[in-house]
Amino acid sequence: MLNLGEVETVSTKLKINPSKILNSILQFIKKILPIIIGSVLMAVAYNVLVVPHGLLSGGLSGIALIGKYLFNIPLPIGILILNIPVFILGLRELNLSFILYSLIGTLILTAALPLTEPYLPVPELDLFLAAVFSGVISGIGGGIILRSGASLGGSDIIAMIVKKKWNISIGACFFYFNVFVILLSLFLFELKIALYTIVSMWVLGAVTDKVIKGLSDYKTVTVISNKNHEIAAEILEKLHRGVTLLEGKGGYTGEHKMVINCVVNNYEIPKLKDIVLALDPNAFMFISDTAEVSGKGFTMPM
Image (cartoon, rainbow, N blue to C red; front, side):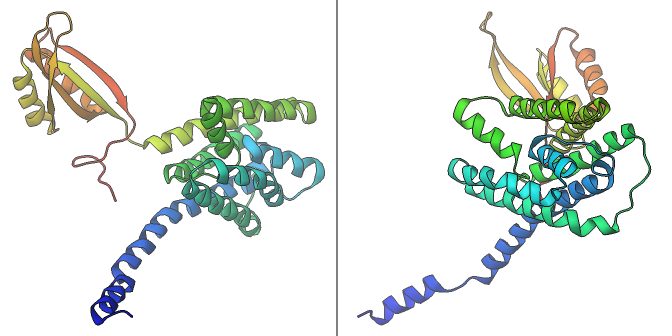
């Protein structure tokens, strides 16, 4: 039998912590909200721009659209049927959390398609504008979902599995999948549909990439100079940007030097160059793209 102390210990272990539960709920909402927003945006793009103008899209959704145009299979049904084997395979090969959130996104998309359709006006646009803006809206929606750590299933999951098993890049998988859809459209539809679909796919990829990386462009600047402390002080005073001094050693000379590292936005690059060259015209400097920055002075984490 358990004594009184052991009973109290068990009770303490089983005691529910309200703050932890509330925190878990908030984390789930924070995770699911962008998936909902992204899925609804994708549904809007399909209902307003893609389907009314007979366009296609990449991945399994493109095949589902072909099924709708040729056999009148409802788009949500087609997407669900095509994704069933993909999610089954994904459960065996990929991270469970990613698969579950991706499944949620797919279910929201298939629910949002019929729910939003009656309330969305279909503008009269030429195919080029429809292709461009379908790519923009789909790219924003897809980028929001991918940035949240989920997907809408389909070719995203297939590409990740292929990458894991055969080390073929995800970008290459998307390319081959899209080529397959385009070739199908060439055989089944007019040439212009295939060409405008290519335009839509290109715009979608560019916008998705931009959303994932963020709307602000930042650069990482590395400076090697004999006047590192003076340059660092000027950057701090005139640009109000933090700098980090790293210890370096020349591979040829063996000379020890301090290396300046800092992150600035695109607009600050010319001024930073002026600071460096004014103090040391012989300074070695290189600038590289930075996808995302989080911290004081930039985007703070939520």
